[in-house]
Image (cartoon, one colour):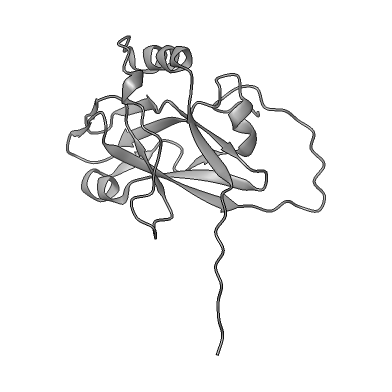
Length: 169
């Protein structure tokens, strides 16, 4: 008889970005100047067996078929080295509306926490379906899963992150 022991350990911590950073990104990305920072909810797992942490939208966004939007979550995440946070659309939204992330899978590296934008997690979405989709403030719309990653033996890297999207090219 084999016994498999699964250990879980805390490797990350979700936090809110500053109100100033959230407001800047909300205005820049969606043209919303209302202070809705009180709508920011930290991601949580729905059940004890859930791998994914549900992210809640702090604003209401409507996507027509083919339309895109970048939603500032108001969230940042401190992640231990050796782990990454991957973001995926919630499966119900993918099945019903063909909602996808613009970059297919969002990758949040551990050093993103220290980026110039406070590590603000911003989610780019596209409605690939044929029906209009409204994500209301407070709705769960994406989920994040923490995964370990490895390095190649030849790895010698001392670069530092500063910016957000595409900042390492």
